[in-house]
Length: 113
Image (cartoon, rainbow, N blue to C red; front, side):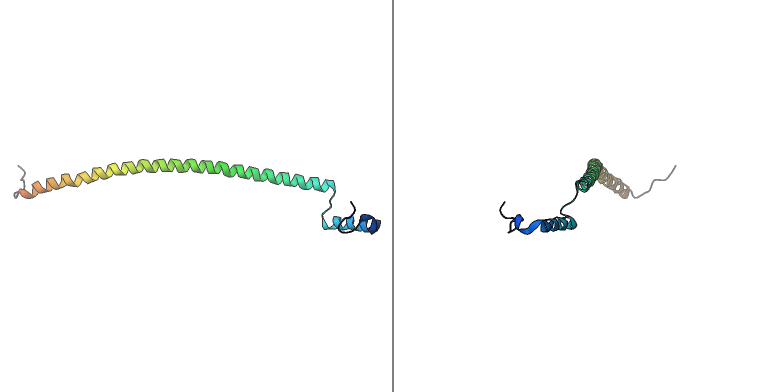
């Protein structure tokens, strides 16, 4: 370790080293272990909160996807029922036209007895 930042530590003296340490402390680059452990504990709590929120969103997504699948299945069933109803209603006018055609050919209405 001949040079540290372009000079030897023995050349700068004890006062400069103390000044450097004080400067590092004031700028926040050098903190006591207790402060470091507190900050790490805070980060761990934040991570737990984020994980809990992630799990909540994951469960909500699963419920949402299940509801979407159910709605899609119901839409498929309704589509099939609407096709059936469409075929049913499409067949009604044909029967009605036949009845009207026979009623139009009879010029005398039926009189009650």
